[in-house]
Length: 164
Image 1 (cartoon, rainbow, N blue to C red):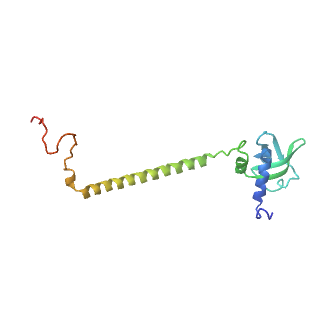
Image 2: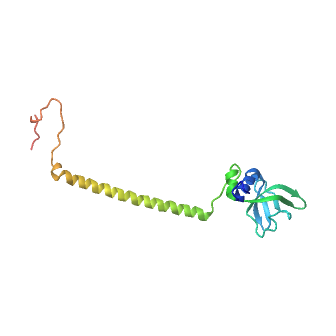
Image 3: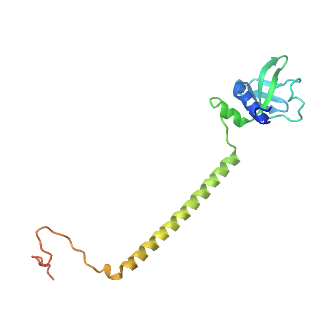
């Protein structure tokens, strides 16, 4: 279609947004299960997806035909992520074990990298402090610090001298 730039994904996504409650997930070869009601169904032989050569993992259908078996008619292949995005009150994407491990590994690598950066920054700050101390001079440590006491002159001696 010209309106969506030649991409059928926009059309399929629009159908998914309207019929997400009629979505089914593949159960076996040619078998689907409605994701909300759990009703087993199959692709109707007149459906365009029936003789496609492969079965999509998720489909949305318009109507269910009941014979000896439930058949989905007017079927469109959709992505599982679309269902989770367009019907979040019913669906969510469960992460696989591998993706969870990858995220955990990435998080550990990020933490190690941050620790490295933190140590480097602390070392740089320590070096900076040492340089500042050297620039001020070694005798600045020897300068005696005095406490200002009200009513006392700086040149006067204390009344009570400590015993030696």
